[in-house]
Structures are given as structure tokens and as C-alpha cells.
Image 1 (spheres, helix red, strand yellow):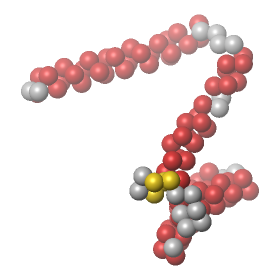
Image 2 (image 1 turned 90 degrees about the vertical axis):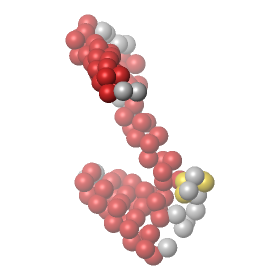
Image 3 (image 1 turned 135 degrees about the vertical axis):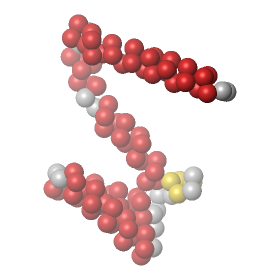
Image 4 (image 1 turned 120 degrees about the horizontal axis):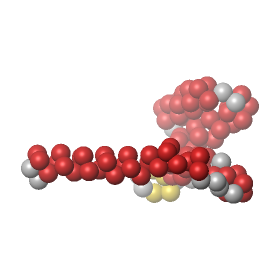
Length: 107
């Protein structure tokens, strides 16, 4: 691909992204979703986060590693417990990363 093709691709992809995403901002008030669907969509961010985080906690080198010697899994459990007790998001990140570092060095 030459430089012109790259720039045309970038412009076209940018336009397609803006067109598809701006519809929600421009016409979102006109779309009425059923209450049950609105309630179900409230769980989407948590489900997406779990789908991103859980595979990283439970695998090591592409192999499922669910045991007590897995520092990622233990730090994730510790961070979850910390959040359930304190409800402090930044503290949970700091506690989880600190616990992960300690466990990684100890195990």
C-alpha cells in the first residue's frame, strides 16, 4: 500500500465510525427501549469487564491455571474482597497490585 491508500483507508474508517456511533447521540432520544431491556443493559459493563479480566486471572502461558500458587488469581480474589469491604475503587487497584507484587515475589 502506498501513502495515499493508507490515508484513504484512515479517512473512510473514521467516517464509518463517526456515522455508526453518532446515530446513538443524534437519535437516542427517539429510541424507546422496553424497561426490561434497559434493566438488562445495566449489567453489560460488568459482564464486559469480567470477560476481559477473568481469562487473565485464570490462565498462565495460555494454560488454565486455577490453583493456590497462581499470584494473579490470588491477587484478584484479594482485590475483590478488599472492594466488597471498602467500596473504594482506587484502593482496590492499589491493594490488588500490591498483593500481586508480593505474591509474585514470594511464590
